[in-house]
Length: 90
Image (cartoon, rainbow, N blue to C red; front, top):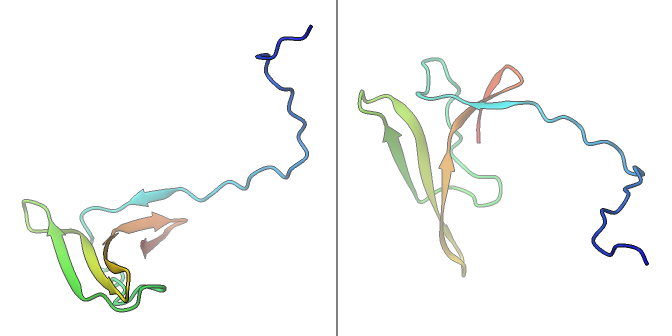
């Protein structure tokens, strides 16, 4: 009788996963960084925005509040990342 807990031999039939570009968070936000977006692709324009700063007053990121019709409210953080040599807000 075979062992029911033995590892299953895997057969590689799918494509290997693409390597994702490395994302590095950028804090504090440097001078010359792109402006943060004023809207969200799916949620629209935020109803409120809070800026988070470090002890020296440098901007670390933002939190946006979105009032969704029928679904209440949601909060989304916004941070600056360096992806493939470019700075992008996510």
